[in-house]
Length: 439
Ligand SMILES: [Zn+2]
Image (cartoon, rainbow, N blue to C red; front, side, top):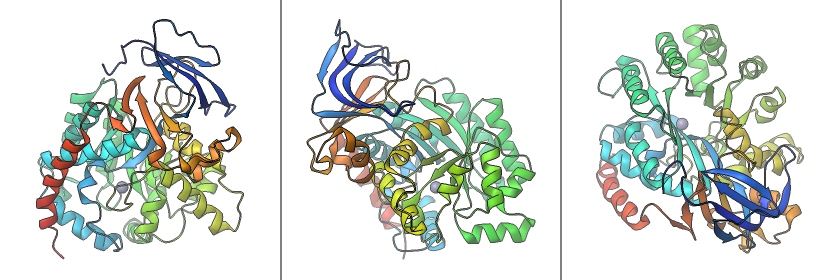
């Protein structure tokens, strides 16, 4: 099995296809995949020369696109619960200083496994030592957009200058079929003007994305305003940072002016409701206003230290419930829009809307088969399937997952890795980190 999917054609017969195409059609039919791409969607696919999977018991759903993670932090689930962002980071920074590249790789492998087993086929990560994460992603077969974390040279724990390290990472992984390297300025609290513009310049030179944290807490906004006289998004526009290939995580504390400018610059938004709630960021991200202004909003889980799950099902449900309750309006962010955020809109944010995020002829065959006999999908009626995916389905309903037409999960088992081996390595790596966490 190769990353380019150069294996025998694959046909899934008679599945419930949740296409997420322009008409958002849900139809019974077949999928035929050749060379990693869909070549037929609907009834009557040719079975010639193909491996056949009987799809009658499944919904075929586009792979989820998780647009904000720190995937290697899977070793740290539960290590800093029930603290605000300041107290949370205190522990995280202490543990961070102990972490080796082998720890990063062990954490990334179990994190990627959790993503795949929950139907996620693409993720956008922000971290350092991204080579280790790229190796983990490549070995298990997920599609990865990996942002090398960049901060001011005097604020880093990285060896060498972060921007130089990011450039090295871009050089090493550019052109890879399933790993896309990118640049990730951490946030206004650790990046000055030179760092932001250096990151942008680097991303433009390599034709890739910038991913960053933006206005997660009121404190971040107020401190930046005290320092510069501008709110973060306004300041980033003023220094000339924003462009269409940038993705902002969180974006909770925004004014109307900031919403308008983010939409105008086509900045993608990674909404992370679980993390915001758990760290008590307060307020509610203005998802409805951002979408109304024309911004594209996707969903991110953030890390399992602040979530504590990588489930996109949970994230969809929570994103919808928060907006409805906060606005006293049950009609906002309906199930279809939540599923859009988890699939096609996530792909659009990554600049890959023409390639990923839906089941359409010509697109890359990243999808999952979700069990229609699972209790969380009962009654498995076509007219309710989008509702079930957004509001009730659990990761355990995901049976099989394909990336570029190649199976990476079958019958809830990783195809390209052994969960128990990955788990034991991760438990061992967690030992020293947890011992060093302090109180
Ligand atoms: Zn984050």
